[in-house]
Length: 552
View (tube, rainbow, N blue to C red):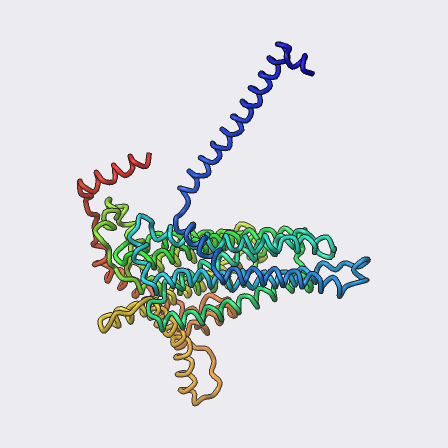
């Protein structure tokens, strides 16, 4: 061995091996350093609010207690569920009962604790006075909101990671398919994210401590109600009425739900960001664009549904859903204040065509009313036109004489006209009431929603009780004098399906009143439409150019 170690050839081979090992180690160290630099650069790009919230949440006592309870409940339920099913668990499927128990264990933190924690994370910023420090940083309000939302999503991921082995056990015990497990977990996660975004919106509403306490209690009750309702749906889907996954309608319906879910999530994020930005900023344009996109998506899915299920009742029901949504949206828009900072006015449309088309996206009660009426009326007109063209082309409403479709198509048009007329009339009346109240004091969006709700309820109940009193509290039948009663008039229109009659007279009166109210709303919007675009100062232009160059 000593002779061979002194051999020059052996010494040379050993030195070559050492140099090769050193080169391999150096290359490995270089790769690790490159990965470290990449991770450091990525961490620098992370949202600072996400880093702060993640550290606070994962180190908090609430998270530690919740996580420990989740693990203890999961282990306890696994042992109890298996012991109770022994010995039949060897020859009978037993995974379904265990799965529902594990769902309840993980649903409590996901649907109650995490959304409420997201609410408190933003509400505490206002209580402690740290929101002003965060708002003056370079982060926008949307970045702050998304940072808090992603922090909540990280907590959801930790809870799912803890319960994942237990979910795997339920699949191995048979009785439930993998598609049902995946859909249950995915939709519960999506619902938790949506509730967390809703919690951030609720946190922006609470300004005083009394309102914060009331909002907190209301939010907890709402989350518990959602937990109960969602658990009931999961139980029905697992035990009583499983989804037929071989049906095309099931998957199309899920695409519809995911599409609408995406629009609602974006809407809640933008709404929470708008509540926490400066009052003079343009907080309405992005929200109204999102509402427009949501309505277009809803109209497309409704048209597709009518192609598969050709039912006028389906169209009527979905139009009722649309009008209920847009009454809420319209009530919020008529409660806005037309106030824009000079910086926001620099982004206003400049050309005549741009001002004619996009001025209605600017904040303000008048522009909001015009935008809501135009958008909803265009949606209803488009749906009526689609149904009419579809039925004429397919010929399903044409009788043997070839003229029967005209009566039914006119009935559909009358129904759409009634919806648009009532929407324009009562939303415009609510706007006038809110404008009058603002001359007395400063009222927020909640008052606009309450006023709109009162007008809608009173317009349905008032004419009915007046007619009942006029008839000495005996049974009354529908007459044209009930044209202000939107509930009775629309129900009578669906029941009769005729062109003329008393509902035809009511449609003519309501359409005329709605058009007159819309014209009045356009005339009253002149002070909001007159806002023009401001020229960007040279100093601001130079600062923007320098900022863009530094980013590159």
